[in-house]
Amino acid sequence: MPTSTTRPSLGTLISRAVRLRCPACGQGKLFGGWLSMNDSCQNCGRKFDREPGYLLGSIYFNYGITALLVIVIYFGLYFSQTMTSTGRLVTLGVFTLLFPAWFFRYARGLWIAFDEKFDPWPNEKEQRELEKRKLAPKPCHVVD
Ligand SMILES: [Zn+2]
Image (cartoon, rainbow, N blue to C red; front, side, top):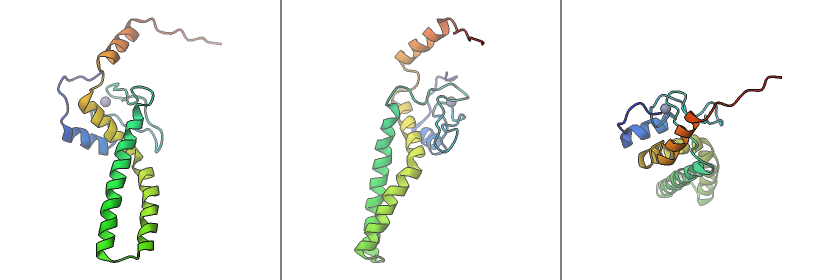
């Protein structure tokens, strides 16, 4: 749970996103490995994957930034006349395959930061679920 009632600014959220840190506290890591994302913040408990399909929103960031970069690079190469049209096609084709694969972690970070800005965790529904879990009896562990 967040320990402070003040919300981080947009600049702070973006800074935490590009450093792949928790948007709520800035301490916990979003990823445990190159591809494995942590379920929640180790420091404050902020859930990173709030519901099924939640992280699909990061595709908007990944696609949008990739498309923007392709447009900028295309016109840069076109007006500099450093490559033939086939060279530009191959360069940008390779770029559009490799860049999103590398950028997906940052796209997720940006998506979670964007979401934290407009729908901070926990919202009312999540708060009710958290309170239910606190009241519910802890599950028994079966020992063989
Ligand atoms: Zn945190």
